[in-house]
Image (tube, rainbow, N blue to C red; front, side, top):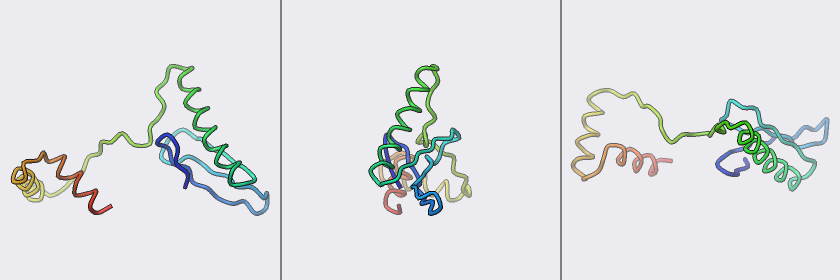
Length: 106
């Protein structure tokens, strides 16, 4: 996995073509890259992200971000209530409790 400017790239080796190639994950937009060496691949990955961001800027479009930092979680109402009480007990928001709990697990 490669990381650059908040984007993650997945890499595979194509034995037939003798190249490394990859694609940026977690976007609907297709962003690909390839190289014959690890350094070429890293450069191509960064260049592809930079090209994508420039293309979006030229078109006055917001680039798609892999993750917004928001997600909806569905849980049983009793668990929701217990989490709310635990957060209040600790003098935290429910959001803060969930973030801290996820950080411990992940």
